[in-house]
Amino acid sequence: MNARTRQVVIGGIAWVLVVQYFVMLVISQSRWTAPYSWSRNAISDLGAATCHRSDQLDGWVCSPWHVATNISWTIAGVCMCLGAVLVRPALPSSRVGAFGLGLVFIAGIGLCMVALNPEDTAKTVHVSGAAIAIGSLAFGTFLIGVALWRADRRNRVGALGLTFGATAIVGIGFMLARIGGTAQFGLWERIAAFPGLLYLIALGFQIVRDTRDPEFQRSKPGQSPSTPAPPP
Image (tube, rainbow, N blue to C red; front, side, top):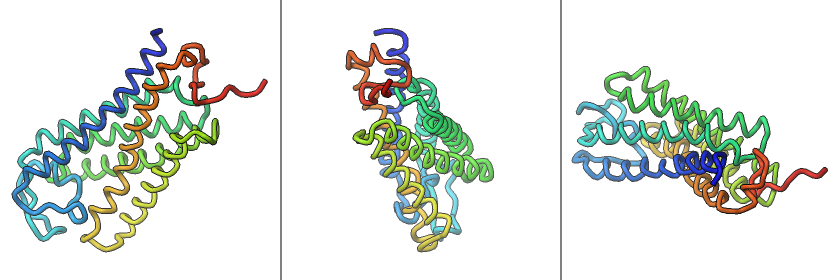
């Protein structure tokens, strides 16, 4: 395994490790004694540092595992940034793809801001980080999908990026439009945030898998085995 392949593998694995974000969400939610709803509660409630009454929910927010949750979110943010830097040689060489990876990197920084600044102790920074993370990841996912699809329209991972990115963008629109009011805020937030994270996990897995192909060793930077070489 040469240095370039090793770099790409590390980046792909970093994205696969984002799966721990979802594992911790389930664990953290299970430790709640107050009612928790995926349609009403914000994701950020799981990272709240203190027990407090939420005017939005008209109920209590109390997350016993908030420390572990915020650590998990920090790890996910770092993995997003690391993968965005290292997987570049495995994706098509294009400005669209590069911009998409840049947005994923920014989204990782935003997620770290969310984790290090809980909603109840540093609301302004927290909300800013959440907006950066969700918005950047949604559009970054879509642009990476565009880059892969342009290189090969048979590329299912590219089509998946287009689909998941578009879904997240629609979720952002519904969340900003406050469709359903506070009763549906958590639902739209998850539709806006989760597709991009799930896509990074899937793409990371595909990238690691592609590096096993001997053609990857011989391919030029920006040309993976699933991306045909341009005509002469």
